[in-house]
Image 1: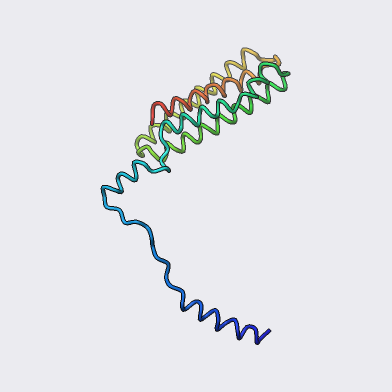
Image 2: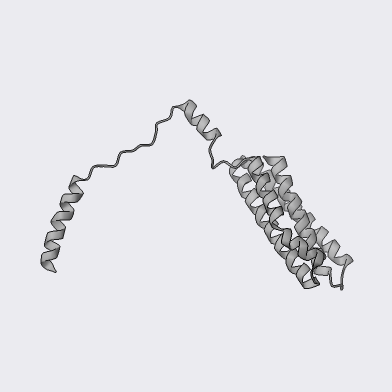
Length: 162
């Protein structure tokens, strides 16, 4: 084992010393090229990108809409909960994009607006649930309002802030 190490160590030293530094092939851009590159940066999310993502969320919920139309009350409750979760995730994604793209002042205004919207959304959901208090659709009605208002808010945020 010791003889093997004595053969390997010099070999590794020899190989390590003869390896050349990797060449940096990153192109050097002048200021005008940098501006053009930023405008077409694939990492920048556009309004159209977000609207397409929201439309895809809507399309992905076809099964849940079918369950709401044809399923049992338990099916309906589960389907509306899934729909609300998907739209809430989409809202968080839109909000994250806006955090990256808006100025700090615009973002602070949006945070305050969002807090007010959450209060309104919850109040509307409570009102709808109250109209169905004690019935089998009470929780469905509450979640349906949360889902629908969250969906609308996704589109609203994109339209107004992008």
